[in-house]
Image (tube, rainbow, N blue to C red):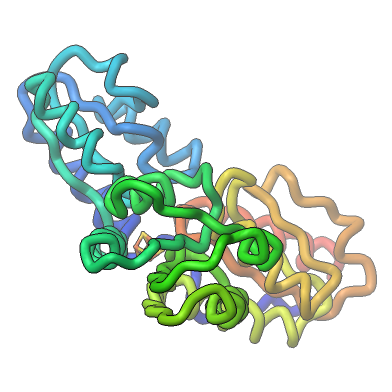
Length: 282
Ligand code: SF4
């Protein structure tokens, strides 16, 4: 059995940067250090960071003092203000590409556009962008949501960075029927698009496709979705211990990709499991 790795996979620039910021902060900070929410959607990485003295808290109310690190997803401006008001030292690890989306949303609102965000309403990145977009920003998850929107004179739309480009294009097309003027920004991250393209390219060449990433990682679930569209034998796993030899019966080629929050060590463990299976089956 041949194993093919997707050309682009694993930690993206924004996650690498936020982790580096967290590690450097842990090494230099005098008092306690916290991240607001897990730094990445990966339990192993969060545990390793805790061992270095960086604790995860879900709410500012749980933090009494010290340093708070904002993760790559970013937060609404009110959260930054509240952290400063509590006297916390704020270290901003928001991905620069997410900051750009926040700024675009704020500018659209300031210019009188009804801001529409294409994304998952409960996703931290979307909550953050909506906060920067000011009063009345609307979040749409799909074309059905767009159909329910009232008409507006001017609509400005941005996308959650991890969305599928073709799906966003469809939403933008549908929004044209909801306004006189539409301003659409392409805010889908290249890292995501490149990983998705590389994953699809790999999935098309193999009998079984593996996507490594935890269930609560949005971009990992997206990768599994786009792979499943071209290869029905696609499996998303969090780690090697979820692999099942029965999935590979009759397979000559297996493809591997990983979400933007999946550490290289987890990828290597999956590769080792697959290589062991190849060696065992001869
Ligand atoms: S997926 Fe893109 S936008 Fe999101 S954190 Fe990574 S680099 Fe930044």
